[in-house]
Amino acid sequence: MTPVEVVPFVREGLGNSSYLLRVGRDQAILIDPDRSTSRYLRDAEARGWRIACVFETHLHADFVTGSLEVAAATGAPIYLPAEAGAGFPSRGLAPGERIEIGAVEVEAVASPGHTPEHLSYVVRAPEPAAPMLFSGGALIVGGAARTDLISPDMTERLTRAQFRTIRDAFAGLPDETVLYPTHGGGSFCSVGSGGGERTSTLGRERATNPLFDHDDEDTFARWFPTTFPGAPDYFFRLRDVNRAGPGLAREIPMPPPLSPEAFDRERVTGAMVVDVRPYEAYSNGHLPGSISIAMREVYATWLGWIVPEGAPLLFVADGVPLREVVEESLLVGYERFAGVLDGGVDAWAASGRAVERVELSDPDEAARALDAGAVAIDVREASEIGGGKVPGALELPLGDLEERLHEVPKDRPLIAYCGHGERASTAISILERAGRGPLVNLRGGYGSWKRRMGTSAHPRRR
Image (cartoon, rainbow, N blue to C red):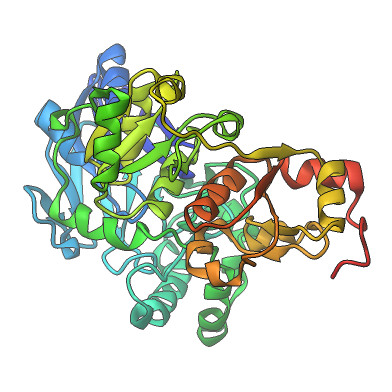
């Protein structure tokens, strides 16, 4: 008997996992794939596995599904909750349905809360003997996925459904059941304290997950929403994209290289310039009005949060792999690529066009500027600020900055900071577009301030 083998694919920036499972000698199933599908297809081919079908636990809010892409490449059918109302060819599953594939049985278990249609999948096989629970966002290591992404009117109802899911949905499964969640720590979609661990067992979660500590539904309904972090704007539009079914990424053309003149024409007619270089490079010279979102694991999250939906994108990349930038942009639903600046900022400057710069300041320089009247702006999440901040700093999380610009002084120098420098660079680009300044990025973020100055530096500032 061929044992089931589980291959996780972790998308660290989104805090999510997809899973490829061998369910027979050469058969496999894929659970909750994102739009970066080449990795699944390559891995299956390298292992000699054929992807027989794809399962979705729910309509995702934090990434565009890759199910249609995989189905187009392999012919595999797509299984998802019937209540999702998918607008593309698929097989809708009802709670309690069981599908036999290869040597395994897959049972659909109703687990609403994160979304109303949510299903989890229990995979049973002769080997290993313990069941496997692919729980989506219904149960994660140390928590569960948030319940406020459908609409404010539904949050309480979904939170109460989440309480019942935790209490009842998996009650018949043994403690040794292996837990494979889609969402995980680090995701704005989730609430959990799994310490970076992606998998667990039901027994461990029953003993340590704080959601199991609540016996009263009313108390849970009041408490759980208070634990949610900020929600990126794109979370509220991707669910509909995934219900309708996205287009195939392979059919979307790459951004063409553009001369400074052609790039400028696109820019002045409404395309958004996204500078994906490291924040130090942006500080040393960038196009006026560009948005700094350094290419890194969380690039897609900040692109979806900061850049308007449907905006045509122009990229300043200067050595950053363009295919990676495009793949990450597609992941959160951006498909209109107007071009990439050929020759980069050097070519732009050589054409006689203006280049802006931002000062990078060390903690000593920043402290002197604060004494002289500058204002510090902390763009981290509230959960991070609990560990300390620059005394007197305005607390304006990056995701809220644009709508809270009225709180930013117009007549003072501004020193933005975050954990390391990347989010502060994005904040500075937003502030520059709004006409604020002069602007400074605290080199190394709050960590450098704390190491050099300590949390009690400048105690007279409040």
